[in-house]
Length: 265
Length: 373
Ligand SMILES: Cc1cc2nc3c(=O)[nH]c(=O)nc-3n(C[C@H](O)[C@H](O)[C@H](O)COP(=O)(O)OP(=O)(O)OC[C@H]3O[C@@H](n4cnc5c(N)ncnc54)[C@H](O)[C@@H]3O)c2cc1C
Ligand code: SF4
Ligand code: SF4
Ligand code: FES
Image: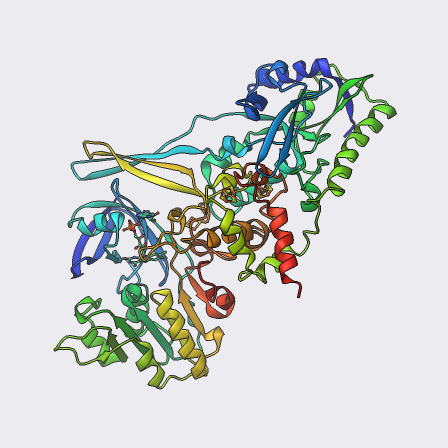
């Protein structure tokens, strides 16, 4: 069984958990994949891997926002508590080949979590990317994930942050993340762009990116749908011709642009 | 596979042979004013001499003039209730002193046999096989129940007005593999079942039956009986060309027809419960009062609930328009991309059992007509 080894509160209602299972070699998960976490009696939910920082024997890292019954129960679990883990599931972010393309990451709110493993790999020189730009938008400064890490990140690559509602200490952008994205220099011909966040935010970012001239084939996004089984059997994650758990959650925009335009799908 | 002739009075021998082989036998029976499926012990359990009249939102039993055993079409039940159980325990968990244990629930093995499986229903089972057993992961409960299944298929000599298997290329002739295949012939001179086997298990049962060689006349009568069923459907109002359904629906996510259907549809989910291929399920997690024992149950779910698409920001498909569109487009279009087959076998259950008589074939035609300038 899995046990919580470390627990860190990012901000009220959102925690990052490190999970370890005694006596087991873990199946290595790929960035962008997710696990199904079960809180005893409360329910089981899809949660992306937001770590580990080194792809090896480290514990599984998950960042969870308390939204409803199951996530509340998971967020309340103390260090040492046990929980159920199934996974890893789904197709993660595209593997970068040897072409060393510039990487652009655009995250909204909790959407930074599934992208953090890639950022770690970049920092460790394990990602064949020429450069990294990260655009990160959150509602408020206090609701930014990984706040202790952000300053160091900002020194290692271009990090653009934005909040909807600023406080007096904030000196980043105020407003939606599309504004700094629109004016920033992105190598549109070569860049590989990875998006994760609320659908509406991804929609607007894609508009900006396409307008800038980024080809649809260079844009990847991670979709969220209700998930119960995570293995293509329960029908909860229907999205047009796709089952998000089986065919995603990461899709190439070129393959799904028709579906992405349809509301209520 | 040679066809043999089994006199109607010997149907009992067939039923007995299958049960004696250790199978739990299910088949059609009269229950609550409809022909449903249930456990069959003897031939007298079957709805002999009964038929049904079906239309959108209507179902009525009627006496037949003859003693046919299978002189009706499909009813509100489908075989999926025995393969994908409507509700089943998945596991039990305990959490005492911080030690979490999860115990998978092993179902006792069952040998199921289905009597009177229509061609469309064989297709329905084949479609669920693709969903549950032929991907990277499988539904263990379904796969185990399915593995031992013995089918006695039936070529339809009666079709309801709601049947449209001809349009979906799923009947009435039995073309998919089945352990045994029956065709019933009943007229003023004779009453028999033409029977052929389609597997070694079927052959082993067939050998135990008091069959006779079928004469040319017997064969001709059987073929004609199914031909006239096909003819009836071909000339009926629910005959349509299904070859371009996927493209048609992919072009029509914005059709005003969806708003029109939404004015009538109650989002009651009857269609998805009656449908032999609809496979959505959900799980329920619960704890006992002491908080140390928990259970997980799986049960049928439906795309006509907002819960199915629930996200923390609200359901993706909150209204009837998007729910009906999801259902029909999934059945007839997106299913091809997901599982390489149609999700509809043309059995007509969703038409009959819709309380307001919404008809999937009519909606296809409406969408097509709306598209024409
Ligand atoms: C691929 C993927 C990756 C994800 N990664 C993360 C992540 O890294 N971190 C994170 O925090 N979140 C992540 N999520 C989102 C997370 O799964 C949801 O926030 C979580 O499922 C909410 O569960 P809950 O029980 O807390 O919320 P609830 O809103 O209580 O929903 C739980 C379930 O109960 C049912 N339910 C509960 N209430 C209702 C209601 N009012 N009406 C209908 N049904 C209801 C629903 O079926 C729902 O599935 C991810 C989701 C996906 C699909
Ligand atoms: S959609 Fe309707 S006609 Fe088609 S298989 Fe399901 S119940 Fe039968
Ligand atoms: S189509 Fe008919 S049966 Fe299906 S949900 Fe709507 S009202 Fe109910
Ligand atoms: S979560 Fe069950 S099919 Fe995708």
